[in-house]
Length: 396
Image 1 (spheres, rainbow, N blue to C red):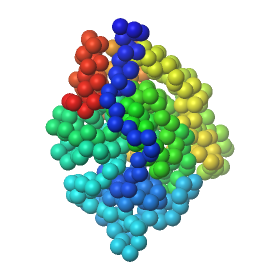
Image 2: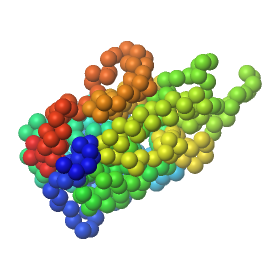
Image 3: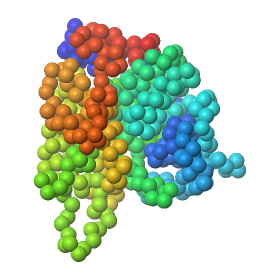
Image 4: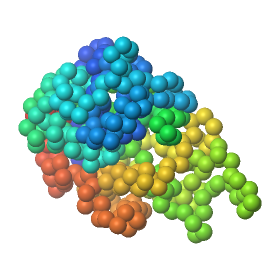
């Protein structure tokens, strides 16, 4: 056995059979599962890219609002305009409440929304997928592709599909009266499961130009620093831990352009972020992943610019709580799970999980993605490699 056991573990995804083509795939028929903000943004981007687009939602309120508005309006730094819905005379997004109808002829399928919805889609898709289809988790966070593959196999899926784990979208989107105002985001890590299907990533870049391919979804998962940036900024404020926004007189009104996500991160927040980033790097290195960005790069990716071009707006309370929930379940809990296998203590990450659970008034750690929840026995690295190989190869 060459190298450390954890290096072999990290290489397991990349060692499975490959079915890549030399040229980029041309995705012509796209299905977007979900009717939330991210789903509508993705649907509009794909229509702008020349694809035929279907959008599925199980919620009448989401579909009704789309149909009443007549389209999805984008403003700001991305493609601007109104992208029509359910129009026969012009290219438009077709809406449906029938899942099988949405994906039957799609060659590219986006699973959107929070982690629990992505899990639900994976379970119900098992009976409906065909070989050659590509599923995209955006954002996939940590272990997203592996968990999806596991759920598909448990559900009886035998199709040879490709899963792409992407750690972000091309734009930050702020919703105002049915309009999505966009700010360009930075490059995000992306990988395929099975590893090495570069043709699928190249095809996706038509709609997501900010993809930064990495070796495997193991690597992409450790590149996911969303929660270590977002949770301290959203959860830790007040007199004991002030943010870095400029102090203005009581009678003055702060400038709107200064109300950015990056402004939530002060010097004390930065120390916490750096501590959590160090823990992620230590765990990643034990799994053979050593090329992770510097903390400043992670902050730029997930917090956006301080102001102006590329600035991420501060989310409202409901959206912020959703970010905290997903970040804990889909990013911090997987890191803690991997740390336990590696025998590394992660006190800052564990404390942030506890804080998030307290704020949300729920034990969300138990709902987190964990290696054990996808059938990986932490006590036996040979079994772990065999299981990951079988997931990546599509035999489970």
